Length: 305
Image 1 (cartoon, one colour):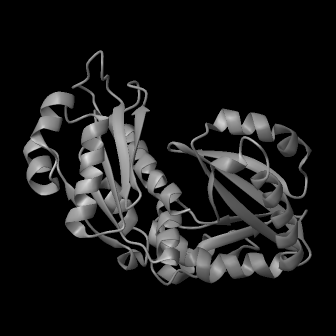
Image 2: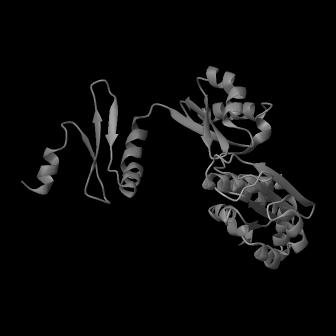
């Protein structure tokens, strides 16, 4: 028996084969007597994604009897449980569209999904519910974007729209804020560069942080964060400069400044704004660094609004 005949013999009766032009294992679609279907695809990510886009998606679209449209609302600065508590009546009563919360690292996403005969009608249902959420007290003011995908994507879009540039000075986040900006396509229009100044000496030599500031207040302080943000903005000639300095752990904390103490700042021509974060020391180092970068990016985003 040839390999092809063997493969055919192993295919369940009535199954639809999904060709795999990136590997040897085909996909399968099985449909029962009631019309319910199950699709099986290879586990290799590149093969599975390619098969879904080329074979399974068109098959699914050919069988649909209406259109689903989803919109995503990004919320930062308010916890999932608090957001859910406020929107619970809306979520409980929502049938079409539905409203559902999703937790991300340090933020919340609200997904609004509607079903209708046409995309235009489904989008209209979503838009009405999105506008209702945006006007809801205790939630709307924490929204950083709708369908933008991330804080950094919203930031890049705002900077580009206003013709502004940004730079980063980072200590505890080690370049993570800059990396997240660079992850956004088209960031070269707004992002000039950054500096990872982990040591005090680097803060002094590269950013112009005063030695007296470090001696008096320490590297993890409101004053140092402010001078870092102003220093990188001046050094790279940008409209905005952001900074992060803190204790990501697991060691290095003190009673006055425990693990999770982080200062983020944004500098602009209007002055410098600093925010102190008290993140849970029970969280791991990666979480503290990621959320600290999120706060710095969000601080800059608010400055562009």
